[in-house]
Length: 150
Image (cartoon, rainbow, N blue to C red; front, side, top):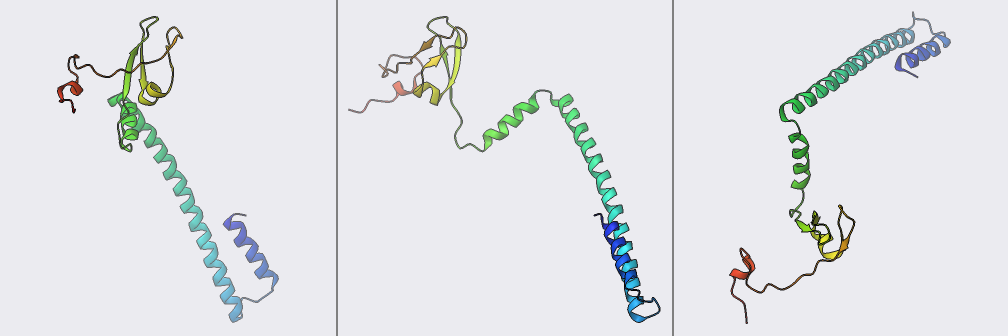
């Protein structure tokens, strides 16, 4: 039941008691019902106003989304991805691998690189990655710049 329906039901119960409005109790009950009816009307008006505010807020949100899309374009999605990454303690490292079968470049994360066979998305060939120790003759390797401990 809505508030107004409950108030009307209460009025019916009060009338069923057949208390005269001329008595002290009758005057109090009538005043209480009038107050309750006014409160119900006020709450109903506030509820309508709140619904209108929500509708306007939804419309403004849609307008804001359209403006962001117009101004920033696809950068919005990139920012969302960056925001999700902010919570991570460590940046995810990705590796580019070249398929020995077809030469297509595949990007994998560190877990995939160390724990799984790599499957080429282009030709479907599976291949393993072999890790070798650095021989000290590579260009730009930071590991080679450090002196070896013996």
